[in-house]
Length: 174
Image: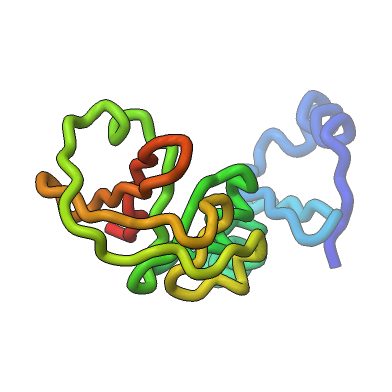
């Protein structure tokens, strides 16, 4: 159990000269109390104080991972799922092909000069629920939309729609 020593009290005692001959070695905080350890000297007392400080650092270091893991940050390992993409951007235009999410609306992809190649699949399901996605599912493309490969790149597909072609970029980890 710690002894709460207010800063004003400590400063007054130091100014009075009663504690000037002693050295202030460490201030440690346990719960809401402060413990001030005053040491005149002595090897045994210094070892005990060093051990206590060392244990404080070890305890703090061991609990660091638990604190970080309890935070609400999202960590994605592997390719993103439809659920994660739609959670981060509910307006995203996506579809699932060969267990990989493809996303439209990426500016640099739309600027590329690409040539449509052969048709590889078509949209067979439509869902706004990311958990319900299976291969061939899209959230905004109409059922029956044809999906084509491009000659220039393996990570971009083109969807042919009534309103024109839409380019999709694959979302993969790494």
